Length: 596
View: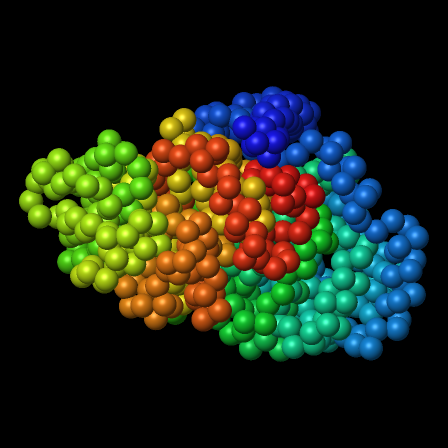
């Protein structure tokens, strides 16, 4: 067993221990801040969803505190930033928009103070107060009198978060609008890093950063390190959240916030922004701290805003309608959305199987397809180099299985190209014989995704025999597939394991594409025996195609870590620098996201 595999297994054991310890710490925090009844209610909800940790564990607070001290600017750095900010060649005015309605006074004071403490000085804070109580109004006026960059509009009634925000946006004079909730905090370097980004590219229309949570006591916890812009991930979850910066003209052109989407208003806004521009930039730094107040979504989840579910459905359904996409939207038990794409039952799907394992594995693979797949208009093409007659050995029912014998030594790229050449389906699914079907809808899920415009390849979630994750896409540079070794339905430093994911590549263990797209890209390179799948996806990406991993298509993979390990070093030879669909703050030594 290699040192890398031993190290990976040890890290997985340590990760599970950390999960348990972290769960106890967070559970104690909830009991202290919200009471035992709230802890019990949240725990029962997790059990109902079959998420058997009381709270999704991410990282120990002590480990995160250590990472912060090593990776974020200290007092001396902040002073240097303040001096450098005055020498930027491009110094845009940033309008920070804050809708206010009766927050805890101390939290509001902290939020405004976090703006005043910015190392970049050319900003204005535009507050729209929805007729809060007199104490809040007095507090706001105190800050207005202290700093001329702060301005406020006191409304005669609370118009809701969208309309309150729109009032503040109307008063904004800046080149860009920065969104800030009335109880959250900006990192002191937030605006500095945004303007640094704009000095590198003044054409950017939309910028977002990483974020973390902050307890009422002021302790930072549970960071979310995000990928670069991933449009298909946005169809299941608003992974962008905070910090978000939008060009003011674009924001006004699209009509800013829509009150009918209150509860999902940010998500709706970001989707509409993405329809108008591709000039989107991710800043991989923690620039926003989302407060865990008892009534916030960050702490209580969707229960804090029960109306948000309907708003999310409206947001996604209208997005699909505007873009001519047809799918059924539903909520998962986790709270994420799932889009079930319409796939005509008459669509022929060709399944090309590389027979690279034992006859028993091949039999299990083909029988699972025939018995479990809900989409039945299929043809199965098995490419093999065996001397015996597989057709008589399997004696398949009907004529859905075809056997193609290779005259040369068989590799999976050669097998896939041979099978594709005789396939008749509109969609081709390439499979290794070591896989088995788990979810009956797997073909509709894969076919639906790879039929979308600009999507070349779709791939499933591959599971081990104990139900753990083996594959959720390829991140070039990792010692395995993304989330390999993690549990299903887990929260991680890189988000939820059950999100749709745009990724650099999909494993050839199971990969779906349109036949037309397959031929356009140029088939698999038959000379690459271990990396043909990734190389194919990289060529697709150069042609402006996207790759999508969907967790709603699930297959079992009979392949151990030892059998898989060698190919990942070969994958690295195809990469250059950071994988855009990963995050530089995360380690490339672990498949379960860990701090770098």
